[in-house]
Image (cartoon, rainbow, N blue to C red):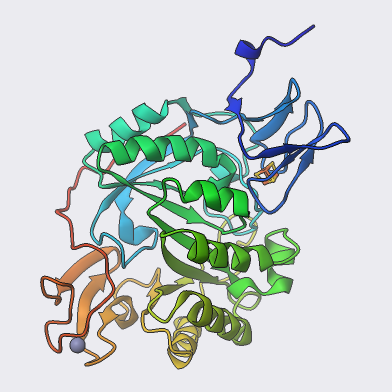
Length: 359
Ligand code: SF4
Ligand SMILES: [Zn+2]
């Protein structure tokens, strides 16, 4: 029986190329799945129906949560903002330690039906200054994110991706249409043995390529995170290579966050990353000339703060996701010595009525 177009789930995907063998190549992420009729790609949310690639989770939001921008983590863009954070099901990575595996490793099309207008309206209704596309890899649903992001801009709301960076020139081009900020998450500093075994990708090379593409072709604010996993993803030489790359390709002002691992999903036998290990990574970032290195998931640690690179005093004092002190003048220069700190925006008024839904 012929499938009626109106009965098809989701929406036709734009990042797709028809191949001579009848399959369709998805160009949303660096997996570049070649998908036959009736099948889905590895992420489980882009599939071929009636001869076209469809984004099956278009308009299906599986989680929504308002949280501080510092939780992403983003510290140099609109500090103190509250962010309406959404996800769909599915993911293009298979991280063995995923904290959101209930969402990311679902291969079912589930979630609350929401149009892009409704997503943007809900963000505005909750007083959020931004929308984050997060919890799973947003490039797999980039067409939906783009449509939400355009609606967000109409309401004066900015857009953030929390991304693994396993993207393509096509998805970066689409990001450039609506994205204001991205935090690209390395894991184990991108070391090949680690990403093969614990993420299920051949190498992190596409992540480095994505960052270069973003820098060359867009104006998106970029921050870097690196999840440091004890014993298997804490190699200092790999961290040094990552820091050198960030310095040379993105610049010394690019913030880098070394995140503490805690056991989850299939890696329950591992321990939390020792603080001393994180401090060694931080020291390498400084040795390589990065001016703004942070530790994450260690509330109360002195390396959560933003330090002035010139006079070494605390420019922005932080505790966890909170801003405790703001020692910058009207132009975001250090009040002590006048050095310009590259932070976009100023602390926003905070609200307390955070909420959450999960389908
Ligand atoms: S987004 Fe999904 S379908 Fe497309 S290439 Fe990546 S894993 Fe494959
Ligand atoms: Zn200073």
